[in-house]
Amino acid sequence: MAADEGPGAALVADVFARACSSRAAFETVTGRWASLVLLALGEGPYRFGELRRRVEGVSEKMLSQALHGLEREGLLTRTDHGTVPPRVDYALTALGEDVARRLRELADLLQGAVPDLNRARAAYDRD
Amino acid sequence: MAADEGPGAALVADVFARACSSRAAFETVTGRWASLVLLALGEGPYRFGELRRRVEGVSEKMLSQALHGLEREGLLTRTDHGTVPPRVDYALTALGEDVARRLRELADLLQGAVPDLNRARAAYDRD
DNA sequence: CGGTATCCACCAAGATACTG
DNA sequence: CAGTATCTTGGTGGATACCG
Figure (cartoon, each protein chain N blue to C red):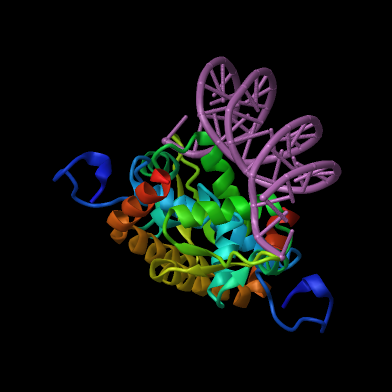
């Protein structure tokens, strides 16, 4: 693996290594908006406008940018139906589904920990 | 839950909601440096300098900032041994361990997908 | 509807220097 | 060793306007 290190050189991919493509991918999928887009698409395909409404606070520009980044990493597919008015669907690839599942688990964990989080933050800020 | 919505109001925490504290926590743990710090601490406790070396590319400033953020959310503990020369250990809390485990799974997935990622990116950039 | 283009403000983040 | 302080800058991201 790691085209980064030339043919045959590769031993293990490493997210900690700046030059490893897994780190680039990791930064893409953990991106502020990209992560939420993946979470949304984990629920099924979405259109651009639907996504914009689902991911609270995202601008058109940032959404567009996040979608391009995820498409580039092969995590989602873009389907333009070529109709008028336009209709474009975004859906996860197999790899995208895997990633989204992990992010979902992470989100669920944090959603369930909200009381703990609030307590911890309050305690920290008090001091 | 959700002190965000007042007493008794809380139904479900939602990462998609800007005001939900799970979203703030989600953004903290998926932060560019914080996520790598969590990954590192998932391997065991680390000292400041060790962490700096482990997480390739992080500056002292960014590391310090990430550590404060994670401590604030109750994901890690800071132990100052009060010795000279100074020794400070960082270790995950129970919640931090849970989060780190999820991030590890995500990183493993991406590390294993490096060939696919490289192919996808090359294809996208060609067009 | 589904974007792109442009301008601009702010802050993330690197470099450097310094301290307990 | 383990940070904090300060300065500077590049990029992130919001607002607005416009196009197929």
